[in-house]
Image (cartoon, rainbow, N blue to C red; front, side, top):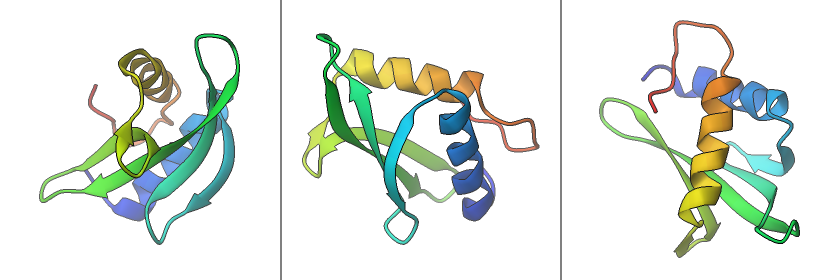
Length: 94
């Protein structure tokens, strides 16, 4: 929960702290474009989407516009985001 712009910036800090490669980001459409290792170690492109709801913001990790990322890839990334979330009044919920 909180201000979108503050969450967007803290998400960037968290990804940097977790050493996640951000290829690009577009705040206008609320997407970070990432490359993450697959099970073979190959870098695969993903979209990390930040969406607003009435009471909070949610993250989804997708391979493309129509396909969610594998569960274990998502879990690993989200755990890294939570571990590296900057100290502030805005805390992510697991």
